[in-house]
Length: 567
Image 1: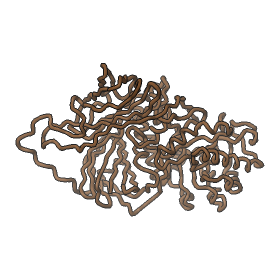
Image 2: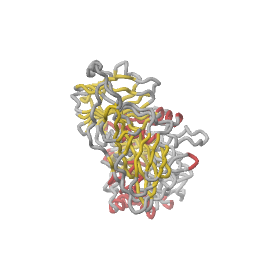
Image 3: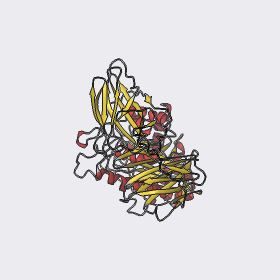
């Protein structure tokens, strides 16, 4: 389908420093107004004379409606451009203030921002912070005297469940959630790759990276550093390599573009070509977990492309698939999950045994009625991956809206189109959901194009929303059953089990909050965490109440939440 090419950003070497309070938060006396905070300050990238930093402040006290975070530098560092904050500096003292869309921080909620700065000689992290004048020690203290008579305590949550998890009924095993590197030129820097796949603050936790398999072997080295960084920085990360075309001389139209079929007498050469790529990457320290035979065999545009039928794909993987070693093959990444391109392979024993995965793209899939379980793939235990979708209609004529994290049009499209289809893909028993470019103005991190207002490498609203799945539903987790009460009927929920946890992802696309929603786990819960992304929040921690096997949460209107139970 139509592809937009990403802007290039020079690679920078990454260094990191983390300042995190380890103090235990102390409760203020009943009824007292409490203030307290903790701060995560991390250097996401550093180069000679410059650095990028991400800051997350957690409000441990009573809710605040506006904030100013202050700190001082000890080595003469200076701050420069910033995002999600209004930043100023006087001498060594720095003040970061909220902007109009992120001034409110609930109790145990967070606010995050980032900036670039300069340094000379050294770049030590600040050692102390204050939120609205109160030192961030990791604890709380009263800011007003407590009343003489404490108010009555609220009983612990207990009652009929609104969402009940049934882990005895299990569905697909999740392979992950991901995005693609640039296909035609360019790559991700080390810092950008770490932001996309890392599990730290303001990192998005992607667990699959898709990359192009060029017909020209001299181009294979372009993505090596990014893929190697992804493998070492991500947890259980898989790499999918997708070819758009074979070399022109092997095709019936003698061209890389406008489709054209692979000549049958070059089938063995093409298999050796795929194998050579896998072995080259393996020798560079990059294991290619999945190799597609063809990107979009049913789409023949005026850029790299190649035409196959379902029968031709079957013949190729049946007769040549064993030549491609140290990876698992995928067919067929058809534009709209068209079964005519995959059924022939699944119905042939030899061809079927030579593949590991079924792939397809989301373009037109829902309209064609195929955003649902693929029964033939399930019959033969072949995981189904959604390997590409690119949707950004919110920009209309190209208005500069994508760099504004609270833009309503961007949020509505993210929640109602992107996140809704992730939910439906999981309900369809698909094992992976892979977006188009991870770095683009409408994607997960910005590309710095001035016309669209994003900062290169900085996480975008769509990235934070996608991370509600990617960061918390990890490879190897298994989707499990659940039931909902009438109170929870507006919520679209899937649940997963793995690593001693039960994780629920909850979409509330209605205009009303669902308050005091009770979630019932299959067993007692030792800890419950709740994170929420909305028009005005980015994976912000939310309060939860736990009682035995139940937890009570508030699900905000027009939001996506993740609830993680530690069993």
